[in-house]
Image 1 (cartoon, rainbow, N blue to C red):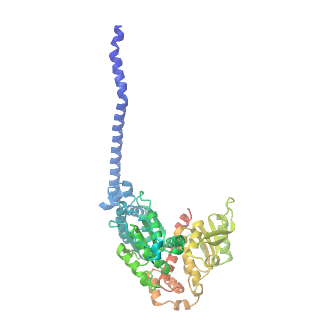
Image 2 (tube, rainbow, N blue to C red; image 1 turned 90 degrees about the vertical axis):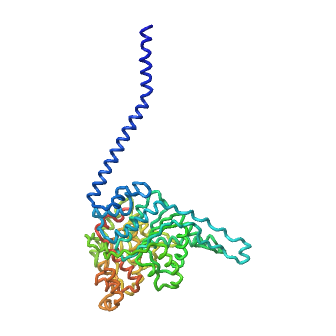
Image 3 (tube, helix red, strand yellow; image 1 turned 90 degrees about the horizontal axis):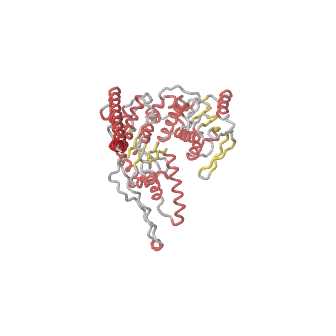
Length: 502
């Protein structure tokens, strides 16, 4: 019995050590984890300091780049800010440094920091419709102008400037770096936005029926509930219906706490210039001037015109050889047996039918007259580029005064292709940048001094000034200049390699 009794202290001691083992493991694991975390922080700090020293960044830029400046105390947000992204693109050689662009990036960075902590007010509910007795007494329906509290709402940004100066690129940097917790956001080309608004207005009118009532209020509430950060590209007003809608719509959206970033070719004071009933649109202009930070991007450089190695996507003149070459490309791209070419495919938009002569699921082929000789609108072209990422256009002519409608449609179509990043293949009568031209010496005589000055301001060469004689008026000249600039970019090797991928 005595040897057995002598083992009891050892058994008790062993049992105690086994019981304490899990706690000791947790303690050791905690110490190891703290050590690893400390080393990671130390390595990150050293790496950040080396990067700062190598790039020569200012203190604030370095702080943003290395997550020391974080309005939301989130390092991920700070390293994904407009300024940090811009400097990264410049350092990698993707962008050329431009002091004017950096000035705009500073404004976008400020807005980025403000929206990170911004909490929009709840959108007011729809006001009750008047009773039958009220209507009998002739009392009209209550028109709500918004009652949300927007005292702390950041000012939006209205960025204007000539074509090709980088407005769209800078706005996209802002949109792409919006903090991930913000889900209610929308980036849209202004053409597409107004088409959407008209559809909503039409649906609201149908819902209200013969009794009528306020149609802009419900549309504004829908838009504000869907997104409180709106980014508009290519803001312009050329239509009286758009002008009347925008005046009320912007008042409502801003009163509901919506923040807008807008790019445009024009200062607000120049919008809808000489338009019908412009006096009714003036309150909207005043709203833009007072509720937005209106700033210009006066770079003087059209980055889409910087010489590039052009990919062979434009073929001129109209010869059997060029036509056969482009036909060969079309057949090669659509050679997949599982996705055969379909003739006379039907697309439907706004209750109308668009016929696509030849197409696969992602590639479409048109004759110029089938695309621009028909009464198609921006909505039709947006529907086309939504379905097809590569588009062939055959037999584009030189367009003089007698083809002005076709020229306008072609410009609208190119805008739609550019926004959707579609890939183009074109056969044309003249080089692509010279298709808007009159024949003979009369073309040169038709160019007024005012038009020539404007084209010079837009950075277009003298041969394009002559080509521009098909257009008249500021809005048309800006649209023409933008189209020429975009066609040059869409013919580049970079565009051909990256467009149409999604």
